[in-house]
Length: 126
Image (cartoon, rainbow, N blue to C red; front, top):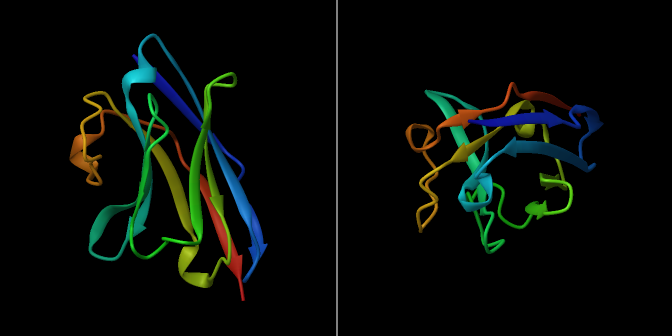
């Protein structure tokens, strides 16, 4: 079993930055992929990016490429989502999730992820 706890959400002005954290615990999560997602129109959730814990390799959705950066801290067992140049469309609840298969290329669909955090709200004011 893997547990994920998001934090770092809040209110930020358009153009600003915010860093979300996803604290991960469990026995074998270092072989997993960790993804970040948010709700999207017509979908349950839309992935913005993912990181392969073992190598630190990342992938991003086109909508956030160049603005969002995912990283991980092995010592703290935490994955981060650094968000820059925020706009109103980035307002959402952000969830981190763990894909225990840890495949490559990394999955960017909700069905591939096995464990989910409770989410953290990000609101961007214009």
